[in-house]
Image 1 (cartoon, one colour):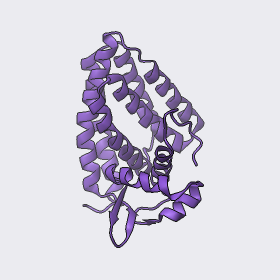
Image 2 (cartoon, one colour; image 1 turned 120 degrees about the vertical axis):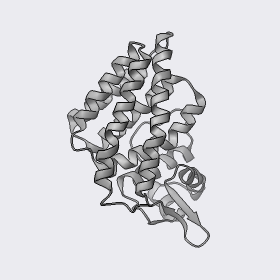
Image 3 (tube, rainbow, N blue to C red; image 1 turned 180 degrees about the vertical axis):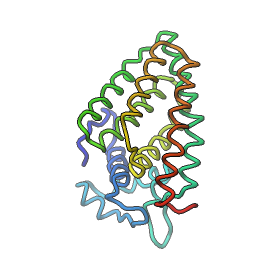
Image 4 (cartoon, rainbow, N blue to C red; image 1 turned 30 degrees about the horizontal axis):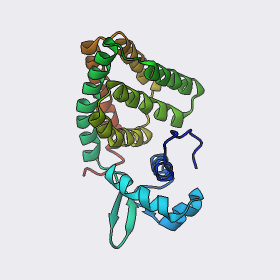
Amino acid sequence: MGEDVPWPTESLADKVYREIRDRIIAGTYAQGSRLREREIADALGVSRIPVREALPRLQSDGFITTSPRRGATVAELTMRDIEELYAVRLGVDVYGTRLAAQRVAAGASPAALVAAVDAADDALASGDFAAIIATNADIHEAIIELAENSLLSALMRPVSGRARWISRLSAHPDPRVACREHHDLREAICSGNADLAAALAYAHIEGGREPTLEVLKGILLPG
């Protein structure tokens, strides 16, 4: 399975979920393709049990669909899915960013966020496209975790997964733009400036909407 280091409390089903998700995002399991439990289990070197446990979570997070006849199938994204994702992100990310800045102003440590931005810098310097996508998504997850709102964190999981998938498909022409914006976000959050942080988060997400839609409209169905 993947080489990224799992959380200490991560179960085998969690690891299998993450590996299948990452293979869907990378295109190893193409949109519309069937996912057979035995084949996946053999590929990952596990039994069918953790694969079976991971599939409902993948369905809940929008990565697969299931039917009595075909079983599990990789979901086929549509333009409507992209539009809905951006609408949700404008709520979840922006509010979470405001909360994160407020938490820092109240004394919370932004160390995990600082480390996430540094990791994204390293990925950008390496030119590793997959690492750039992963670390950029990690930044947004770190912001939500800093907000210390369990419901918001639960909402973020499928949103973040979809964002990773869409980033892989749309391939921002200049990842340095996102890098600069993430640095600005980090600075605003670390200074405890909630209004500025929320405004930057809104501009960051909204600024990516139209370029992403423009790229994907020739690839995805309307929905």
